[in-house]
Image (cartoon, rainbow, N blue to C red; front, side, top):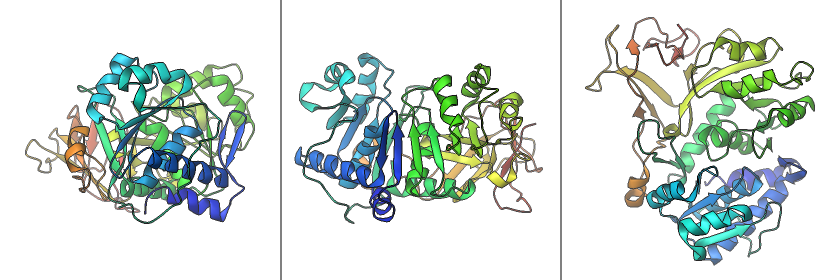
Length: 408
């Protein structure tokens, strides 16, 4: 199946339930399905076919998610671009991914036209209707085919486009739902950008996969985030350390009611103890995740039932994911020897944009290696979540076969 099936199924099951909350809008699952179908029909009418790449330039809003699922329904590949970049920098990503068209919010249209030319830009205004012949869900899209390209941050060189299949997103969503015990009653607050893997795949797509509600913020701003949390309906949140520090420094932090919030997911960098304490001192469970764009989401995640005891760790390997420490020959590193964290996932999720042009209908190679900085193999089953010192083990936990990563 393609991932747009999530939306059509939820629309049939709970049509009046809110799928996406954004500013003053509530988009129900029935409305979301209708909008996805119309946009898919419009793209098909414009000549978009299986394997075509469609870029997006605009804010984090319902239209971005509609574009993702419309592309999925067509068998096309969705590419959300960094809305903070000027045209000269975006040109690098466009040259790598070569999109057939670029969907752009009105305020981004001048930049979009500069990047791809005026004839390939599909403009929209947030909240307005799409127009086109609706395209219902069908079963012709191969679940192993690519559906999403997210660009890496470029910390080790030129940013690369990591390509994910429908199967990979389905596996990531199912694993996250399992480990965090998510249900359709959850409401997710997404305040990280949707062009980033953390914003799109850590909680947002998993929530939509089970018919939960996603509240989107156009950008991060502590005051409206705390006001949102104070409503008492948000149950899950991604908050990297720097966002947590800004929230805790805001005058409204101490008197914001957090009783509705059952879990905060953090990570993306070294996580200081005080980034955990701000939440746990308020009675909120906090769990860490280690992931990377190439994995399509989390590689490790602390199971919610193991917080707070395991909150200072990067957690256990995600379902269908294996982790080991390897040497330069890709062999298991003996105890005490530095090496690289090697991960593999099934189904496979990663290819770079240079390869997607040649292999877009093939299954992609599994796994990859993280930089070797400070990673040491040890027989004691721990791996720190600090970038300065990491240790790992191949031995199993008494309660789970998945690896535990601990802070030293």
